[in-house]
Image 1 (cartoon, rainbow, N blue to C red):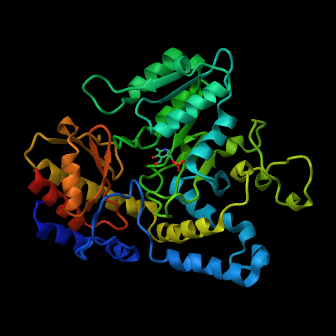
Image 2 (image 1 turned 120 degrees about the vertical axis):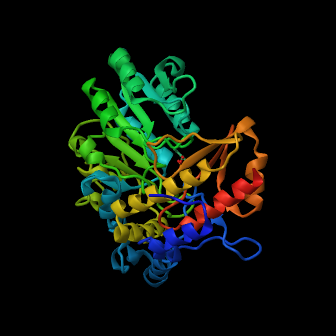
Image 3 (image 1 turned 180 degrees about the horizontal axis):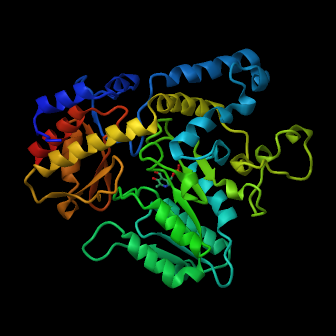
Length: 416
Ligand SMILES: Cc1ncc(COP(=O)(O)O)c(C=O)c1O
């Protein structure tokens, strides 16, 4: 498409947008002057769907009405409430419904998955991770390595881009797998890197790893609800994600996990809790743990229903729209943003996100000058700053408009 950097053109794009009405489904935070913020921060915390309140109210009312009997008598019985999310999640990550489960929080799920899938031996004990992975993931893998009695300095292979490049090349990952494959127990990558916004080649990396008998898992914090995923088809061993970014389910809301069906009947070890036990006799309180033979078998506790209700509200929007249409608009919005930013003639900013991307764009600011970020914030933009030198923006297809993208560009241009 021949883009133009004018406000009128942005309005025209909005008029043509088939998903434009979904913006009205969200609360857009207001500035002090009463105008809407230019909210570009769905990669950090997604906005609240207006329907969320109704879903929460229902559970609060049922709790007031039924007390403990709400587990069975609530309009949406709490006993199996997490199952309401399964179908929607399976569509979002490209899985069978038996392969996904909403539970815990992301880092907890990452640990639970590593208990099962990181089984180091004297010979095979290393983990591959991005050098600039989200720090929590690095802490998690290092603590797992140490917990197994290995040295985290010699056991962690941190992927870095080539000199002068920002993205990590698949061919470089392939080379490491080829060279050290027999010593590697696990590959854990962010499906979308939190800092650069790079999307990894899930299918290829999974195949390369598994050919060397390496387990392959992904942290989808920045991928779920953002890019098209086919976890089952790609044969990924496991994945974890949170629900508060692109999945708009509220701060700290319950996370989720994917376990490929090939592992459901395996005798891989796991940490256990009663909610992962066979549903038929869970309440007979047997002494021996017998896991549910689906991803649900990795659950520990009965889940927080109020949080699940918020997720359910949000996923109902994803059900209506579908990932295909969402990704289509996402590409248009992001391409338009890239076009607009490319028309700013300034060497103070550069986009470091490669073409393999979702909706996030990482804008590197020369000399890490955070002042620029502070000024655009004052002017009504909500984005985020990641040390040492990046402003991350995410034009989110469900609630951001082409006009938002244009306003962001106009403010940035003016400030520069
Ligand atoms: C890529 C990534 N991994 C892990 C986390 C940690 O998530 P949580 O605090 O929900 O465990 C985050 C949080 O933003 C993240 O962006």
